[in-house]
Length: 260
Image 1 (spheres, helix red, strand yellow):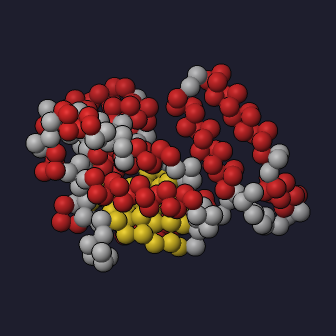
Image 2 (image 1 turned 90 degrees about the vertical axis):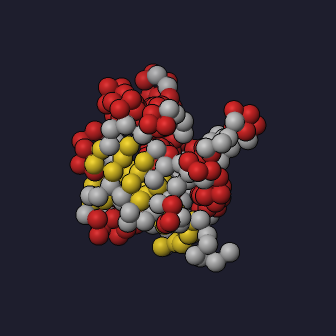
């Protein structure tokens, strides 16, 4: 399969792994083949010691315009139940321990919005648009949208988006807390990779500990989360990188992290 036929394109820039969704004629609509390939690419980067952070991006017109409706229009309940639809491959991103950045331009609709929500940081171009319009098809957001969106922007706004199919532009998404930052359209690629490179330059074990701790805040009580965070902090004192970082600070020099 050549690059034009690949449903995802993979490249590296230093310690940054980049995965580009590549179904331009379908505005990167998400089907099983694409989600299989995306999961494979994410796990490969996660296992690669030379990679410290990952960027997922699409085209200038669409990050991903949703799930591929044409592929699923005639599926039955038993089709989706027996194939473990969504759980089998859409959830692969949850297994990735390294930081994952979504670089979103154009449409992030339905499953595309849910994919962005599953990432750790969302960088939006000014032309980005976010929506969960499944209600228009008598469906519901089923790739984590009804769960991650309220945690990101609160119940009231999440209800509004899910029940009315409201579309947010990048500025609204930024105000709501759905995205991390907004950048000019022409700067999206460079800004996202620069952010990933900065993150990847830090100690990888510390990055993974932070990611795991923040995710724990979503899924546990404050008391449990604080206890988990404290154990992660204590564990840093068993890390060579932490001692290097502190000594470099005291010696007024740049640290040389070895990611251990």
